[in-house]
Image (cartoon, rainbow, N blue to C red):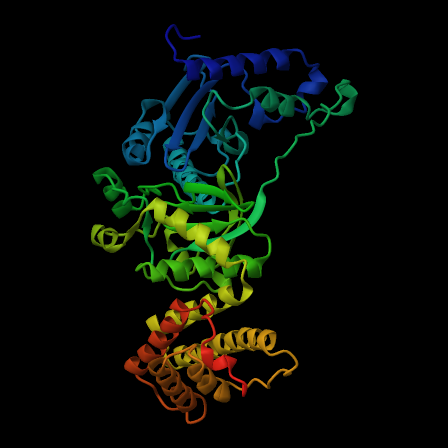
Length: 494
């Protein structure tokens, strides 16, 4: 063992020594069943490339195992932990090392490459690609990935590589050695280790999506100069925040809700329709607070798990524009970051409380959802659809108000019987009874004319006409509470 080594090197040297001790305890017949991809016999050199993404909380190792006769046995070299901005210099220094500046003996060639440097270059590039894919996968799925060796490959007939997750000190070497040695047939007298039952803590299933157009929650993160350079070079996923890491998690009415710094909102409701309804209610409330937020379509929902620890395993439709912050290749320029509004966390808490209260009223949540769809179609220049949705809102609103008003009237004048509902007759009655004022009744009639133009005459409507429809719906939405019936409802004629 070298005179001066660090703790990570010491762990790997001890691993090699333990491997040899276990290998020496095998019979000659048993040793034949240990793969050459798993052999650390003398002389053995181990060179480790250790990559780290602090934002993704990911450590990755590439082990290059050689058996050079002219180099010391038990030699362990560790490059790292290497951060993304250091990769170029670290990789260049490794391949320019004298120890790899040699030809592969003809009898040991496996891949047809003549030099060790050529072999190492290819492995480093492949390793970097694997690291980036794993980092992106960690963004999509917050599932905890176990540490350990998960890939092995030949370099030459007497050299190989391993790829492992985790820091050198966190790898479970007992399991690695047991897996190697138990490859021998059962005649060796070693029974497989009994399976250990693990208690898995269940998380609540839920759904989530991004506030769109995109926003920041809490504060606007600042990207360092190094991170900006790395984003331009596209050498690694360097984000100024960790995607899907909640800045706010709370349990309200037995339902978990969470929000991330880059505007992803999640709710722990198993029913997809109810979750979509709740998220759309939240988006409308945000819009009414002055922060534009489009309604959520079913295809924009991501599936996830959520508990007091935040957002867990997830499955996201990453190709949609709403989900672009999940893709590390999606980089915002500074001016884009500056334009994105910042929402205070306290406001988010307040909006979630209001959202879950509204969800207790099916009529109110449905009306709010229709308004959100109307607003979204207006903002995306789909003016005809916005007008039709606005009229659907009016019909739903009037029907709800009429039903309640008629119920109140029957309580005052029992035995009258229910009147037949007709939207064209209801609006004048609601105006006469004081539920809506004359100006609002005129706006509704104007909206009816616009609806007929789109639906029956296929007329192209203007932005100004669609805006009128949206403002009419907004006035109705802001007065969604049932007004007290006026004295006009209490006369003998009904």
